[in-house]
Image (cartoon, rainbow, N blue to C red; front, side, top):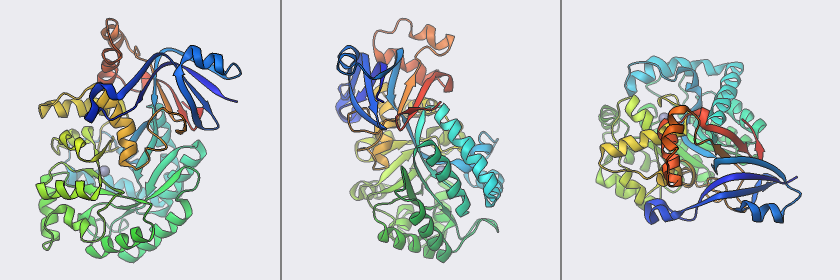
Length: 425
Ligand SMILES: [Zn+2]
């Protein structure tokens, strides 16, 4: 049976970084018709009600219906260590991440955290994630099974590391290739799941391992490849020491066949001009992780790159300090302010929906509200707390009504999350 969701509806006909506010479409008395997991139609509520009298109606009043949020870079195994105190990148990995990731050799623990993570993500209005797992194949099976049970579109891959990681968290060039390939063949394109080839980053992979994963990517060119790039300055110095032949950090990937369309680089804060030019030329994607960048003290991302590159937005759970894409939009706004740029609310929502979908090369399926798109929707209460309600009371536009929720909202603002045409949270 078809479902008709009523409320304010926000969608995009263009890119607000190129076209400004006019890129957005807002229907105050709007509706979205959903059937069989797809969006069938969107438009004015009265017209759609008249045209589809049999549809089951869910009236969200003045709540705002947007495409489900897409978190384009997370580490679901770090769910339990989120908001751990006082470390920068390398210490963070050694003190918190690696001991926690060791536990994912146990399939029962992996299943428990995968389930907890997706429950938290959807409660925050997130309908798709692109996640790193651990080196253990069990960690991939766990998140894929949990996503499959919920009908979610999820991207995930086994994190490969063959050096500078403790015993128990290292594979080899050959085993990384073999296990990644086996997992890819088990999960890629099954239901709404996609496998992502995932070297953690150059400091924890030998050139031989990066080359093996580059070879795997050539065999399965429709996969994404995700890794980290230029997050902290001392990390970049470390990479220089480990790869003396490389021109720069990006070159450590490029030299092994890990730079082209479908490459998704997290962070990318401290880029050289050559790196920026090559990323744009290759059609690669960047993912901005603003709460992580301030929490771990990494630096201020250059949002100006949104004009040249596919760019997504992400929490970087658990280096990031929140599961909420609303909170992540607020952090992106603040970082841009520190670089002298005021991001418009239309740009912030776009980054968390269309932008992330483009970064994951899935914009034809998710990230927007239009006929034919998959029915992943987030319904936002624009007056979810007394502080937000009093700030929005005098709003003269949808943007003025939405911005206090972007800056102060959290999971309390998520009225409902629809995944694959069904309400979840
Ligand atoms: Zn990360």
